[in-house]
Length: 261
Image (cartoon, rainbow, N blue to C red; front, side, top):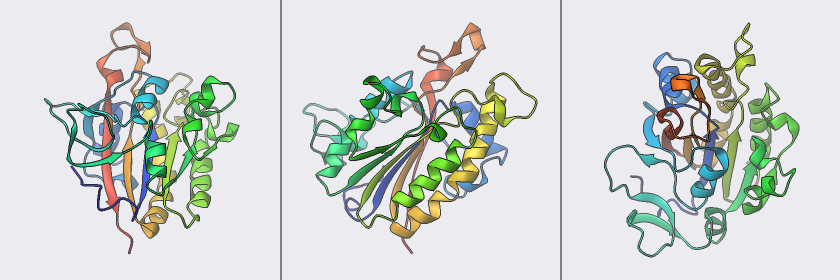
C-alpha cells in the first residue's frame, strides 16, 4: 500500500473510472497488447470487488472513501479514507481526511476537485444526476462526453488537459463513458454489445488517455484507474448490471505514481 501522506499537497490526485468495465475484459486487453499505453504504466490489473453493482451505488461508496476491495482475505487497509471511528481498514499509513466525502476532505487539504462526467448519473440534467457532481468544486458534462458519442473519451481528455493548466493542486475525476453500453459501434459490423465490443471500447479509450498521462506527469500525480462495476451479456442468463453476479462485482484496479521530471 502506497503511503499517500507525504504526497498529499505535493502531487495531483486523479481517478479514472472506466465505467462498467469487466475484469476479464480488462485482463484480456492487457494480455493481448490491446492497451499499450496503459501497459507502460501498469504490469497487471489487480482483481478487486466493487462496493456497488451499478454506477450510483458504487460511486456513493467511492466518494465516501471505500474504493474496490482486494479480492483476497481481509484485512485490507486503505491508503485514503475519511475519518470514521471504528473502521477496521484505517491503518497507520492511511491518509485520513475530514468531511462527509473525499472531495470535501481533499478541499480542506488545499485541492480543487474537478469532475468530468460521462454516464447519466453525472449529466446534471435531473436532481438525481446532480447528486454526485455536486460533491465537486466544479463539474462538467455535455452530450459529447456521454455514452452516445463514440468519440467521448477524446472530448473528455481534451477537457482534462485544459483543466490541468490550473496551477492549483487538483483532484481530477474522469468518468470514462466509452466502456459503458453501447459499445457495439467500436467493432465494425456489430450491432449488439458483447465482451468483444467492450474490449474495443477500452482499446479506443487507452489511445485517448495516452494524451492525459504526460500532462499529469509534468505536474506530478498519483493516479487510480479502475472500474465501478462490470456488466453481463447473457452469461448464466443475466444481462446488464445492477445485479449480483461475479462478472458484475469483480473489477479491474490499478494505482501508480507519475513523478514530475
